[in-house]
Length: 331
Ligand SMILES: NC(=O)c1ccc[n+]([C@@H]2O[C@H](COP(=O)([O-])OP(=O)(O)OC[C@H]3O[C@@H](n4cnc5c(N)ncnc54)[C@H](O)[C@@H]3O)[C@@H](O)[C@H]2O)c1
Image (cartoon, rainbow, N blue to C red; front, side, top):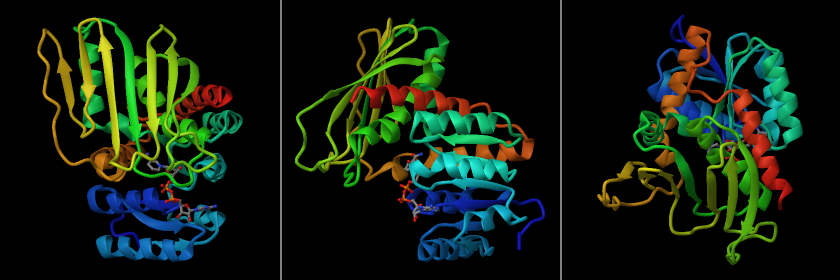
């Protein structure tokens, strides 16, 4: 039963960390939609998340163990895909062919071939499809883009990014590109309005915490179309905390997103202090407001029948996957 006739019925595909986060943030903070169905191959996980949603909304989502049942459910207008990376292309294809609108977690696909195929299916459909690059909805990144667009800093010359996860027991080196660097690649395309044309990986001394399939940390060196040099330093097993930061070096200043999520600008010989504090354990804490803003923008897009212009489209997802593919080739 949908609580209000106006509520849009949302189905969630995969309710691990991210899918559960979306289900609960949607229930707690977003008006105009309700989670009405959940599909996860782990029925216990799905049933537990359904119960948590019920506590918040008094709507008990139906639990399915088969995607076709969820997609055949008439109360499901749109879906959120938060299954593992390698299933995104398949689940997105099935959802779009069933006529659903989709918020698909990043990446669009885990290979370039699949990304091309699914982007074509989305292009030829009438579905509203956004890709979950939530940094586009984070205040610090929005402030940074606004500052750069004023033009007062001159051209962007170089960008240095850091991405550090506390622990990643199952990561592989290629996942550091397709799962991790894909965030930086998307946000840099969004900031600069240009594509990334070359991507190469440099290796550091390897931490003892890395599994045999992982070289960790790495430095990903990229160039944009106009020649901006981009370095993405990734450490998947930092142990000390979750950090995502970025410095944009311009002709007239250095604009830094600090690891706790504020924008600091060094210019005219003034250096702002780095904010001290306690690091987050993971992305759910650091980017919670961005996930909520992204969900609000998605529901708003459904109400207006047009994808919010700040969202990453399937074409953006494809461009990011192509750039990551260049990095994977360089391994
Ligand atoms: N935007 C972001 O900041 C962000 C952050 C973390 C993860 N992600 C992305 O979200 C996705 C999920 O990540 P996670 O950390 O929640 O992973 P997770 O392993 O915690 O959850 C994945 C869930 O999918 C379920 N699943 C597995 N196979 C399935 C299938 N065939 N059909 C349906 N469900 C299936 C699993 O049982 C599990 O509950 C990944 O693609 C990841 O890259 C995005």
